[in-house]
Length: 413
Image (cartoon, rainbow, N blue to C red; front, side, top):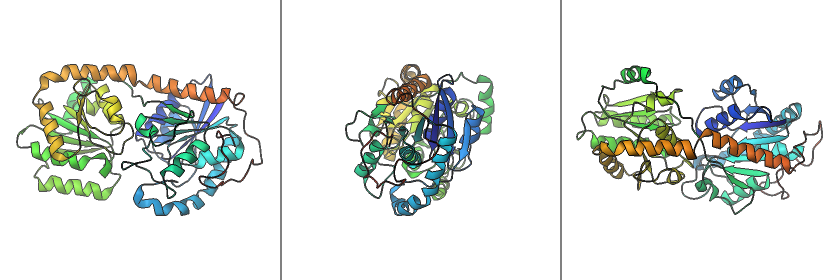
């Protein structure tokens, strides 16, 4: 069996972390022994432990950040030296044959793998170049993507949109996110609708994701305000916690200004997401920073029509008019017009819902996701004589090779 040490940039349960958790749950224990490192206590830890995965907490800062916080990166790099050393110690203790980093935000696993001389796999869930890049390096996007390639045996990307930030390389492999298809919870439908004050027969728009400017909740709210008079039964639900408190306050202020307090619900984080989604009429995905678009798949899997903005990996999921709908931009007027077109033609919904459900089942299942990760892990081990365990002590070189310099390699040191 191969011991794989996974390093997460976060202990929350957002898109990248859910991808990791589902992978950890379903990796074949006859082939792999997974362990997990998280940067702080959070819901990902207990969820992984429940799946039989050993979890360690190693405090660390993000190595790359949103553009406004780039100035913090040099200091974070110094603070993370201790984290890299500790990741290395844990890898030796667990006799890890592979270190697997989940997100471009964490370099610790890559640097520890280089020091120990074992292969490193890096899963990238973020757009790293262009106007819609979510994470930025103070050295620039080219330096960042070169660093990722140089320090990895393989790089997993979650969409073609993510891949485009990288130069052509045989190390890059596409593994789409998968979501679980859950059976309809009919007995819970009335309870959920009562909790949110949804009258039977009313129509509801839902937006899934952290409350954050890049996710587009403000634009959806302004579109909803344009439609409120035309559709008096229409309601709007935001499902997700606030990543930006000021942004949440701004949303609530707009709700009050538009006299929509009785028609807009802030539902917060919902662990049983499908129970909420099954009560919606339309799921709107207005993000321009997401590299993939997990929320769109969640809506399809729940049997709900999905309207998404034409951006990022969403164009790889949705075929307009067949399995969902695309808006040309997230301008409130454009979104309002697209929503009105959907709401005015409910006769189109059954075919779109059926095709969306089929899309998830055939192209974006969790089984396909885990098969893709498994194949890559086995390929890496095949190239490294079954991924030998790291040495008990010693180092193959300096812990902090220059970024993005240092020698070229395949992540093995």
